[in-house]
Amino acid sequence: MKKLSILRFGKIEDYILDYLKENLLKIFNKIFTEIEIIDEIKPIPNDYFNPTRQQYKASFFLYETRNTGIDLNCDRILGITDVDIYAPGLNFIFGQAEFSKSAIDSKACIISITRLNPKFYGIPIDNEKSKNIFLERILKEAIHEIGHTLGLEHCNNYCIMQFSNSLLDTDKKPAYFCDKCAKKIKII
Picture 1 (cartoon, helix red, strand yellow):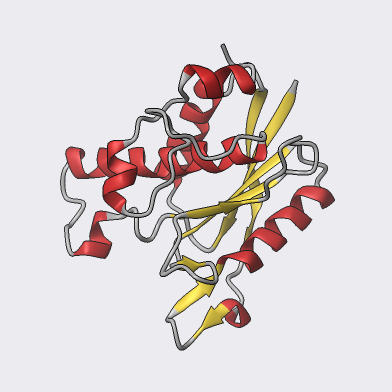
Picture 2 (cartoon, rainbow, N blue to C red):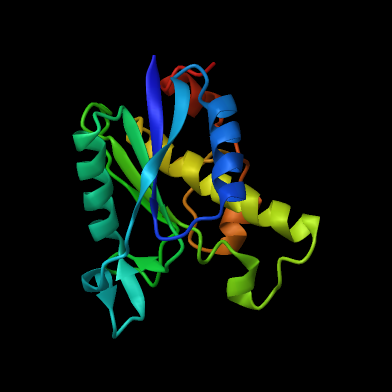
């Protein structure tokens, strides 16, 4: 069996990492036997920042995540950051993954928690409900991007692999795979 590693860029609060570790292991327990939080915390280099957009280019995070995964011999690696990221042609993205239908070459993915956080929209996380919404959004995006590293494409079913073009899309989709996607990655 395999291990999924989590790499932090900047400060990610422990309660987020603990939530991800616990829930990703439940979802991917037929693929990963262990979820490891890498001790090293990567700094966020200034050269990732695009001052015109006031955002960071996601591909740089993905590249660094992949290289760390190779160096540490990770089976799969999820990078997580709290800065706003983008990809060319898009206003923003929640995450990005290496993708190959064979899933042999896909090891790395990255998510940003910035636009998943109610605080980004002026809503404080001051109660259990808003905190749970935030955590569920993070989990959904992590599952989605890990799904890509396992060879899954976007799905039109009621599935975690639906494309999220907005926060509403993320909130509406489930935190699980449809039967078709689950069978492809052999978790059912």
